[in-house]
Image 1 (spheres, rainbow, N blue to C red):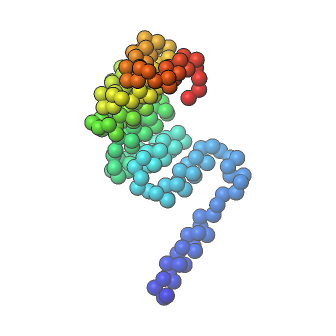
Image 2: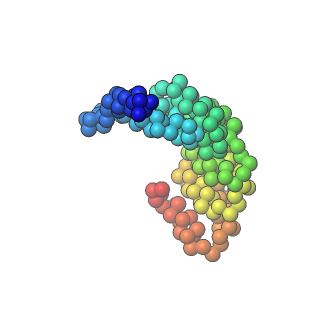
Image 3: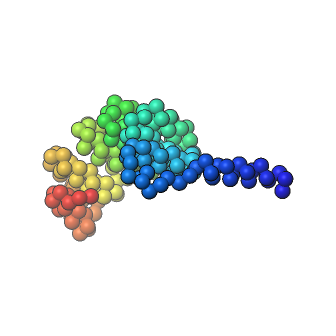
Amino acid sequence: MRVCAPFLICCALAAQSDPQPEASFFKGDPKVIMVHAADKARVRDPRNSQLLARWGQVYLAAGDRSRAEDAFGRALREDGDAGAHALITLAWLQNGYKKEALAAFKAMPKDSAFCAEWLARVARRFLEADLEAEAIQAMETAHRLAPSDWEACVEFGRSAVTTKRLELAGTWFFHAVQTRPRDKEVWTRIALAYTGEPR
């Protein structure tokens, strides 16, 4: 019991030094709230690569680039899977850093079916950020890795419709139909893509 006592004392002190915020805290500055929430989550799982990438996105959105880059670096050192790379790419892109986004994308693994879903997600965001050549490259790679994923084709086509690239949309809707020509869901999703239905 004597050995455990210091440990218990430390736990009690830690609990006292980490009080829960008052309800009014969540009505304050959004940047302060988001960083606090990311920090609280990070303490509980500091080695999860995809979560580290997401927390880096929070820090970047809050204007703390150095903390964002630290979180991104830790994410890649922990695992560096396609998901972590994609989330880092999207974080840079969402915050207006196209050059950094493209560099992060270049380092992303692109060699397995696991990568395909992430590549398709990045492709849509690239298209929406007017990086058309990179978007097409990413989507073509995703399609090569997972040729039966008709949903990825439809969603990329939808992004093309949204960004007024109707010829490109047609190309990817055709890919979707080639995969499942008699599937009513494929045809319905293509129809809805032209209506501007929210995702």
